[in-house]
Amino acid sequence: MTTATEKLRTVRPATMRTADRSNKELSGAQWAQRFKGSKDTKDLAPTFRKAVDAFIEAMTAAGINVRISATYRPAPRSYLMHWCWQIRYKYVAPEDVPAAAGVDINWVHPIPTASIEAAKQMVRAFDMGDLNTAPALYSLHNEGRAIGMSISWKDTVTVKDADGKLVEVKTTPRSGMNRQLKVIGASYGVKKFIGGAKDKPHWSATGR
Image (cartoon, rainbow, N blue to C red; front, side, top):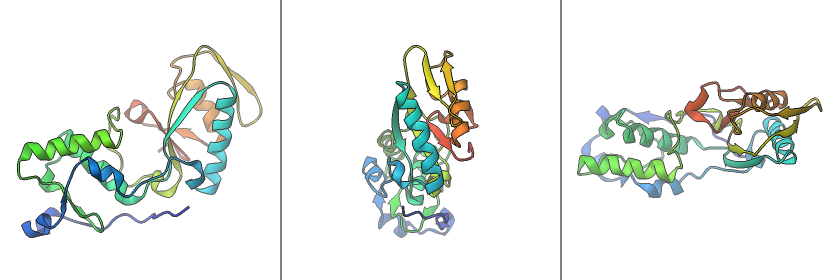
């Protein structure tokens, strides 16, 4: 696994000339194909990978459907995801986004509405339509110690925890937000995001 745990060097907009922006590629859905991350657990940090693999094995053995959306994420991808979400929901103006070393994107389109539309396209391309908070500029995904998973099942399931105990999960919702499943995950060292429904797919080594 190759990781970049240092935060990206950024330049505040006030220091950028108009020419600096014009030499860069405009924002849009195509940026989701750059700085690709991983959906494979083999790209997680070794200790966390072992925990995740065991937890997923226990869930699938119980008949639970697990779809992985993200494991390791390079820092430039986090930068793109964070700022397109902020622009799309109008928490920040495109011209106020800091530049990042090695990411030659121009967030400012000739027409202001085009900047917002491009950000919307990026949010869709990054599959963040159901995300209720901006992705972190720097997170445990950048260290390979977080995973995004969509989890679902029908009826009651029986899941083995890390101690070998069989736990009958009768409660709802039948998703990763289930209280019993969170406890089972934690027994393996895979902790549900402490921010609740703001980021439903997110699990990590610490819960952050």
